[in-house]
Length: 229
Image 1: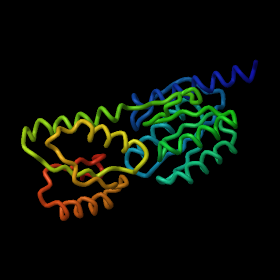
Image 2 (image 1 turned 60 degrees about the vertical axis):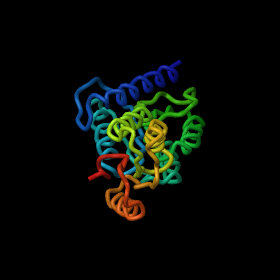
Image 3 (image 1 turned 180 degrees about the vertical axis):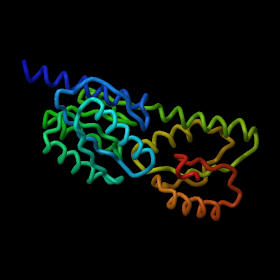
Image 4 (image 1 turned 90 degrees about the horizontal axis):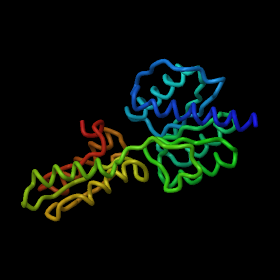
């Protein structure tokens, strides 16, 4: 009974920390104590979004008197699984994971479940939610569709060419890009779709090559602001 009660407190606390991220952003505000809970946060990359997310997790947990172990997978699925294993070896009370690849989640969740460690996901979720504590997600497909709607309104009936500078394959970028492509009007043709890996330098190279290969390009859809500028 005591173990079940402890797991319940951990689940409630982890949900409170992650749920408050939408309110705190990169900041943090006060809250109740955590009874010595330790969380493992596995981040997926090094963009400003990932940096902001880590700061929010750490600051929010700090106000709850919780300890956070952080690790970065640097967009590598193998590193992500190793980070999960390392967090489990630290006997964390729960895991918060910003995955690098949706396909990696199956292995991550299986490891956490086998160790009896609750896992909470950010940005993207899995089709089977029975084995996770919860998830804080955005309907990225709908976000992509909104951008496609702008292209449709701006282009009117004119035939146009569209280039896509995606993020890192396999995670949030895929959901965003697929939503965009599906909602494009019939007169808009996607002539190029390459990953910028959420890196401004990489994205610039991709965009330059795209423009050279398609000099009549009318629109460029870029997966985040950091790559766009």
